[in-house]
Length: 163
Image 1 (cartoon, helix red, strand yellow):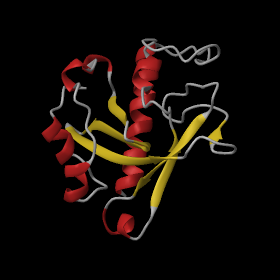
Image 2 (cartoon, helix red, strand yellow):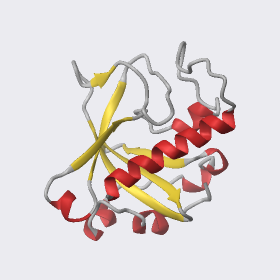
Image 3 (cartoon, helix red, strand yellow):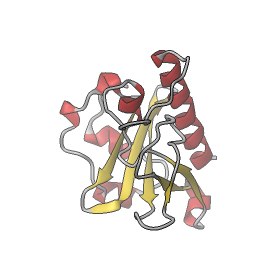
Image 4 (tube, helix red, strand yellow):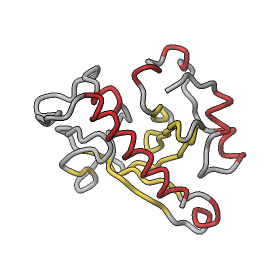
């Protein structure tokens, strides 16, 4: 993924109003992100831990989603794996929900998926971040094929939000 500026990120949101994008949290360390290892940029809001954000480059353009995360608690985390990168996490995988783009989102319609709570799928797939014992399944796919699968899963999720 190519490096993005704060302005590019804010203008890429497809499921927020312009007013919402002006006030949402964007990390200040964008220059320090490992852009070459990212299939998408994901982060959580430190002031609102139930909020997350995801920016993916699709068809040469950044597309960003605002997400809500279920709070940790009994029954709130799925025991299993991330639907994007197929990494398992001992503490569970949260359900993240995105309002649909446009009128459907204004009417309260959402799309949800189970995704790594720290939104670091790209780093798990590449082995740059450790998910712990049993975090990565033994697969015959190459790292490049796993990256392609993750990118396809992210694109499918964004497509569901924008449909």
